[in-house]
Image 1 (cartoon, rainbow, N blue to C red):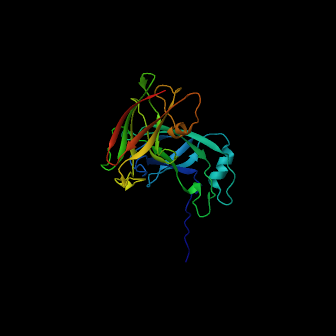
Image 2 (spheres, rainbow, N blue to C red):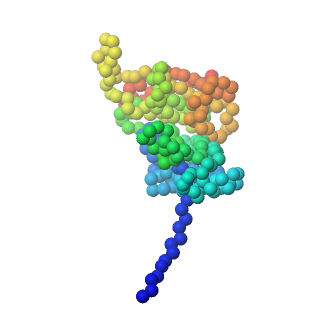
Length: 256
């Protein structure tokens, strides 16, 4: 009696990481179609909606990157790179933006018990268009932003409590300078201070940042823009408003 053996060919390699595109209002992973460009990388969308970086195609440090992709124990050192990309929504639900993916993702956890960044997708938040539907209980802002007599396109918007850096809501203006910002989680009634028993509104600061050197039709990274320190090429305005659950505030603002 003779035995028959079958050889199964396998191609096993390390991936570089993944991208997760999240809805700014809900925080959920965007499930619909997206057009993602990340020059120098090969992307494959998986069943969870993540865009997995399966390989790098650029020629710089090619040998080291091949060693990293094909080795498992120990993990070899890999050259640190930053890949700039863009994402847009063919369905028109989200505004297009730029982003940067830093590679390689670290295989070490940032704290005891935490998941290493290598096994967590890098999250890129997508801001809604002005036509996005709102839930009845959400507090929201509809902004029209102008600068130098023209619509201020691609301006990053952040909403937070006065004196706090915690972002309650975010958005970005479109080509018309229009933006929608939903502040999710504002309670209908909250305990008041001093002589008030309850409060039905919360005071917020609205910070709007625009790149004054941006070419017409160009895209920005709204996260980098919102975090940029004051200086040349940046126009920034802070406005105050009271928000309430289920109420939409409409504001016309002019950047300096």
